[in-house]
Each structure stands twice: as C-alpha cells, then as structure tokens.
Image 1 (tube, each protein chain N blue to C red):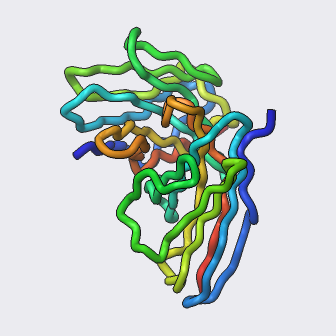
Image 2: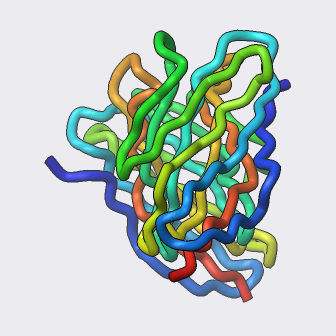
Length: 114
Length: 114
C-alpha cells in the first residue's frame, strides 16, 4: 500500500510567477485536502476536493486553485506568487465517509518565493 | 469558532525524563482531537486521536493523551523520552461546521537533551 506522495519536494519561484504542486492520494482514498504551513506555524486549511469538485475552502484568495482527477490525485495551483506564499504545502488524503479521522499526510512541498 | 491553543512553544527536557505537552481547545460542540508529530523536513505523522469512548488515548512511540471535557484540554504525555522524540508536535481539533477539516495549534518544539 503506497502512502501519499507529493511532488516536487522543493521549489523556488520568483514573485509574480505561477506554480503547480501535485499530490497522489493513498490507495482507496477519494478525498484530498491541502494545507499551507508557514514557518513556525501550524498548518492552515486551503481547500478540499471530493469527486473532482471543491468541497470546502479556507480563508485563501482565489489565486489559490485546485483540481482533482478521476484517479483521485490532485493539484494545487497558485497564481501571482507573493513572498508570503513561501511555506510547506501539505496534502492529506482520506477514506470515503471518514474525513479527518483517516487523514494520511504527504511529506509536503517546500515552496520558496524570492 | 473553534480554536486550539498550545501553551508552550518550546519544551526542553533531558532524556529519560517525563514530558507533558499542553493543548487546550475551544468548542461548543463535541470534538475530535488529534496529536501529530513533525520531524525536520517531513510531513505530519499521526501520534494518536480521540474520537469517542475512553478519555485516555494511547498512541504510537509510547505517547498517550487524556481528553478532559471540563477543562477543554487534551495534553500529551510520555513517561520517558528519547533523543529521537525531538520534533515539533501539533495538537488539532476537527471542524465539522461546513467542511471536514483540521484546525491546528501553533505547535510545541520538544527538544530532548542527552
């Protein structure tokens, strides 16, 4: 059984650019949630995807967007990058009907915006 | 609104000593509570969770936590720590008002000294 995998592990972008982060969910998990963890902070919920549609969103601007694919993998896209977007981005997949009770987190993508 | 407070940003302790990491939450409804550990440059690993039932929850690596509804606390304890327990620890509460997501505290850095 494979866990949650995220790619890339590290990324450096310039302010104003766009970035795409990827997440492959654990086998059997159909829901993917994305979190942003700024340095020295706890993770903050960005949004969740279920059946290829956004299923809830945190307090993040529209330049943060996502996709979920038929195989349940997911992408997080961020447009017009700002310096404050520098963070560790974590995705978590979960089993149908269990929500956070069955969260499995990936190792994250470290994004640095310069 | 739900929130989580981790009262100690850092906890230094010597190897083989006991440790308690404190967590308080605010919620007007029943809660699910979680403790996660994060090692340097890694994602989040679930230590233990309280969903219902016994208020004393045992987790991995010898950790346990006690749910105290009257004090709205969920403190994490270990009777004897190892150097390898050095990491960041996050307490989290489930928010199910509109989206099944986790609300995290700001974390406690456990530093174990030889």
